[in-house]
Image (cartoon, rainbow, N blue to C red):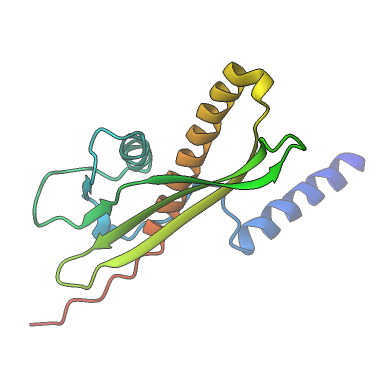
Length: 167
């Protein structure tokens, strides 16, 4: 009896999550017109370019050099920081890191669809632990780049493709 009840509850939970449009994170549906895709950026050797290329590969989107293929452009990424708080001595205690990048997707003769991504994080800066803080900053920047690559993929899945007029 208990086994049947657990089976029924499990089956109901599966149906409820499938019926509401639930999908696992990073499991996006991409328009068929975006495969294959041409990936270009301001810096082809950047970490963000590498992360986006890897995510495209994992999503089954072939990256090609064909001029006729839809074009995903990654602009130059920027990291800015602003002071949030100070120690009583006047030294900076906390920064806000702002990582931003602009990207655009161009499909055929359509106008480019531009996506501006901005990620903000707080960063505590204790001058007594300078080496550890440099490593922490590197890790935080890596996480912010990965999050930006995920947002670019999400924006790619939301790309509007205009239907070609019938000839």
